Image (cartoon, rainbow, N blue to C red; front, side):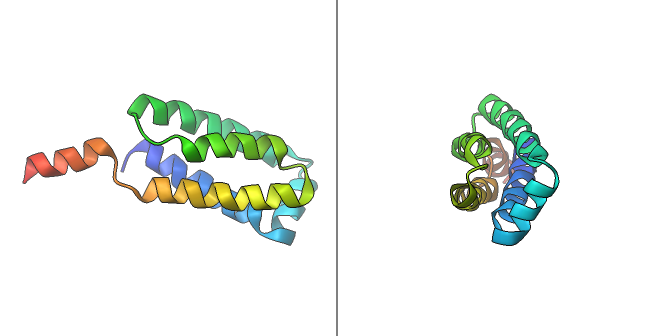
Length: 106
């Protein structure tokens, strides 16, 4: 499993947690919006590594947008959920070089 897939699973899981209505709001407000900055940094790193590997960047771009607008109460919750879905779908797809190596090996 590649680093970008691991980062997408991690960031997708964290986005899913932040998308839970009361739990996500409690985490974000209790930690003074620091989780949004941490998630922004995580999404930027994931985006850079994904672009380097030639993967799908939709989830990471959505994550960056989400981190910027998530301070808006219901908009943030919906965006966290949408971002989590996109990131986990991207993470579940096989990497191009992994599928190529599998074909070559057989």
